[in-house]
Image (cartoon, rainbow, N blue to C red; front, top):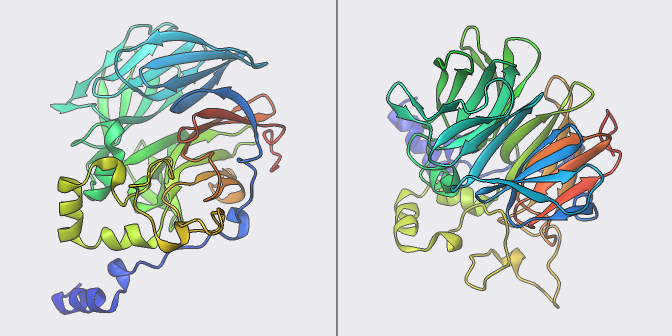
Length: 365
């Protein structure tokens, strides 16, 4: 594109300078499904979820928790000393991503195997893990510059240093599959050499051929920031999201001077940036529609935080969705997984694990 073309785009607010956002419509039409869901467990900063056998594993801060399938009190399985930032399960194994440290294997034939760096690059921001087979683990490293807990900073700095890696659990060999990604936050296998990736800051889902390294967009122009991807019983996928996009954040991302000062001078909880929860402090930024009127916050208000999980078919196309809107509290739904016929959802912003009964197994709820 010519200099004149870029100048006109910026002047007229079009192309890369447009702040027009896709609407929540069709299969993404808002509802109250997450807000009305059963609370399976209360867990502060509930994050990653993995169902294994008759148990549900969930991370919260530095700890890995385990809950019986039937519900009831959970137990702390292990404290890793640093935040658990990713989980994946296969047979008797768990792969655990630890913020700033890399990946460690727990249980199974590769128990104790760990990965912390390769090619002189640190695995300091593990955002997603998926077993390709019993001896191969796929890993998303969200950024080469910040840790997994600094996802908001990476977004507001327009980070694009994320990468995808293949880890051989038998030999310890590591292979880089893709680079230059804007916070790859989810990864899912398909049964072939193709895997799906969520690229959060570019609001899209990509397919990656791990045999050739070819990347292709599959689902673009999403109205929210995609997070982790979990397999569904019906050969589809569950796609979770950090938060919804809004026009003020899109505008700030295009105003480099203001954005730089905000990151330097304003405490992070009060940035005008997406959040996993909102309405917890009077100093938080807000737009006019976020102000309560007569004590009521309108559900359709523009908001920094939101709860959203989308059911996709085998081609990664949405067909149903589950929401917690602006006036709800089940926000920051960063992970989901099936357990029997139920869908389990981690609401990190709401501090609880939700159970949506009988929506798995190909049913859309």
